[in-house]
Length: 269
Image (cartoon, rainbow, N blue to C red):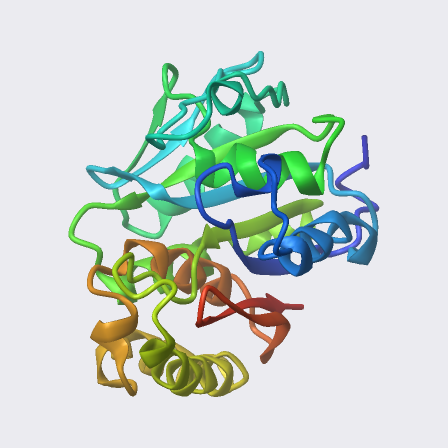
C-alpha cells in the first residue's frame, strides 16, 4: 500500500459505466469494445497504483452524501433487470476501506455538508461493472459515495472540492455515470448530433478554469440539448464531483459514439 507521505497525486476521472452488465455479455457487434478497452487501461494510465478508490455512482441517492462503510467486501447490488442469469452471479470482491469512508465524511462535514456512513450498503452496478473491467483482481480497497438527494449540481461540485485532499493521499476519485443518459434515445440516430453538441459543451466546460467550470456545470441545463441528453441528471452528477475535486483544466479522456449517442470520459489531473 502506498504511504500517504510519499503518494503521488491521483487524478479525478469521470467514466461511462456502460449499460447494465454490458461488458460481461456476448457483444458480436463490438458495441462496448472501445469503452471496455478504455476501462481496461485505466489503472495503467495513473501516476501510480492508487492506495484506494472513492467512486461516486449515479445509482445511489441518499439524504446528504453517504459512504459505504464495510471493512470486508460489502457485497454487490445487482440493480439491473431482464439480463441473463449469469450476470447476477458476477463477482467483484474488492475490500472496503473504513478509513476512507471516515475521512470522506469528515471532509464533507468540515465543509458544511451533510455526510454519513452506511455500513450495510453494497456496491451497485455503477461500481462493480466498470471496476471489474478496470481492476479485475479486485485488489484495490474501494468506497462508494452516494449522490445527495435534490441533485443540486453546485452542491456536487462543492463536494468534489471538499474531497480534493484525498487525491494527495493516493486516493483515485472516480465519478461513474454516462455523459448521455436518455434511455429512450439509445439506438435512435436522431440523438447523435444533439448528443455530440452536448458533449462538445461538456468538453469545453471541463477544460475551463475551476471557477468558470464550476459556474458552467452548475448551469448545465442551459447547455445545448441538455434535457434531451439527461431527462434526469443522476448520471451526469458524478462528473460534477470529479470536476470539483480538481483545480486544473480537464480534458476528454475517451470518446465514442455508442448506440447512436456520443459518450465520453473526462479526466482532471
